[in-house]
Image (cartoon, rainbow, N blue to C red; front, side, top):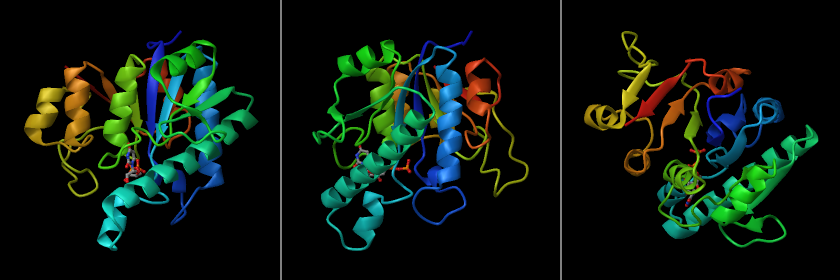
Length: 236
Ligand code: UDP
């Protein structure tokens, strides 16, 4: 039994680097795939958005003189690379997986639409959605909020390196304490950096709860899905 029927899992591209400085760490990739397989076996419908920060971020390119739109398109392509890697790792574990891209690029993936995504999840496939919104001036945070709302997920799971939301940055402030749960209004009032402002407001307006937890500890994804309160729940 799980608490949620359908989830949007947002994975950070940066975490995919593992111990490396750039690109994809095969061990981390395999760990992610194994964790996703575990919850897939519980019967959860899974949509995934994965970032591209381990390869390229549009804004970093702008600082180096790239045109912002082209930089963001490069960032979106980085999310495609990560999504293909994850789809391959998942398929290797025996999980059926579908890649639905926000920008047409058959045969790399099918062109995304909400109904196709839901159809595939209901048929037992894990759906990965690279290029995310397909638009520049977005990152995968608001992108995953958008997709989570669109696919009618019950919750968005955000797996960064920290194990929840704290009163201050725990890596800088040893007195920081972790929230068990917090409202969107409180996140906005305190200016907490859970996600960017657009993403936070979208989730608030559309009533999509988020659980922030440490996905890099193997087994945590299953723990969250079984209702263990190991991260921070953000809600209205
Ligand atoms: N990006 C974009 N539109 C989108 C999603 C992503 O332009 O809908 C680009 C943007 O340049 C972003 C990059 O893709 O910086 C990689 O995503 P992100 O920075 O969110 O990756 P993460 O921090 O999660 O690794």
